[in-house]
Image 1 (cartoon, rainbow, N blue to C red):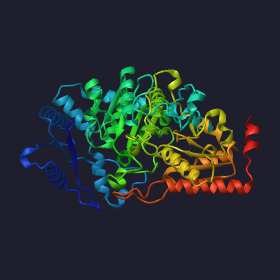
Image 2: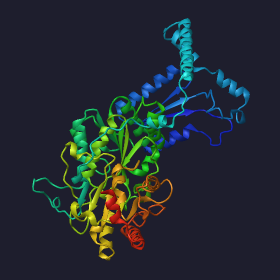
Image 3: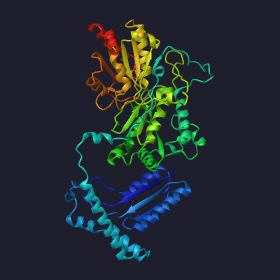
Image 4: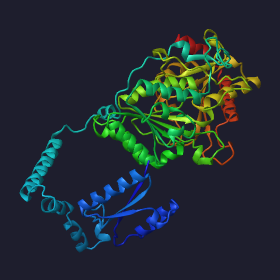
Length: 551
């Protein structure tokens, strides 16, 4: 990717910050460690459309041919209108200055150039065309004014995103799993298939997707070389022209993804670290709201992979971000805890993206190469699920980790609801609570809830059968930071949440370099679960009554 840096040069009376284009040019040259004669600059008159076109073309051709940056300076651009109706131009511009800007008509100058220099059309023809555009614009406004007014809230909800593709729910034997089962641990199982870490499955499902759908492209920073975590390793060579490097500019990256989507492709965008989404957040919100703004006519179907999330010691807060602040309407956010479910969920996500929905994957760094749950059990290595209809995980599916076979689950009294890293942490915490003698292992289930933009049906279906529920969120506690706390009042409203519940999350602070003290940990979950257990014992327990009611 080659760079053209474009600048404008003008001055406004009353500006608080001096605008000196030469400073920006000097900075850019120093950024590339280049002398003044080593990075060319083309200056164009911003009021001369032919000059703008000519200089822009030259700068573009240079950058493409030389694979090097160039500078493009637009001079003398006139500000003809204020930013908005509330812009108080008279506070910092004189009336003569405002009128002078209004009279500087770039379109009129362009017409003179077209007729006199390029011999394109006549003044009469351009005047007729101008009139035609004005009439068409007036008619469009008149037609819009006659459209039905918005009176129904449901109408506003229906166009937030494209309709969801309905996929089959996971079969029951894939929803519930005993964490003690050893059938997949070790290098290979009986079918000679190798159980692998999550990162390997992520690469494989990307290859599966690129194989299956010719319209899919993969965009990101250094993704042609494997990306920041080697998730795209080898894909650029296998799929030339469809795995594309972009410069470290999230606004450009997401903007390009919008363009790809509008052109009929399905982009998968890799954001190297979750915190970096902040850099492109305006564009992110624009692509999210597009379906609503256009009444469903211009969706931006895509998958956005957000990496560098939660637990880790590298890079401090900006590389271990654990807040979900950007969850606007029209976006489906998911966070998976293991490679097998990641593949299942990705198969659903690509179906949703191809019809116009925006799906965001939150990928926990700690899980990418995690092998062991406890000691050297290799329990977190999984087999790659076969590509069939029974191995798709929709947004309504949750998975329950028990310590017993499904037919013996009548003893389960408590549940920990979590996602991502929280699943591993909660399974470890469950073992600690059992070691303390507070409960038997088969009394506590861990419910993995990957879908975070709403409450999955699967969670509503099972949560009411427990004496107590602990929500364990890997994100920070507090408003606008996590996904699970907003679910609690809705579950209460739907009358499916037991009265005995609790909530734990990471502390509301920032993450230091070289330490994991600020992340949700095993002790946090143990303390929260202990409160739920003690409270249930004080209440006398309603587990058997709940089971009879549900059954």
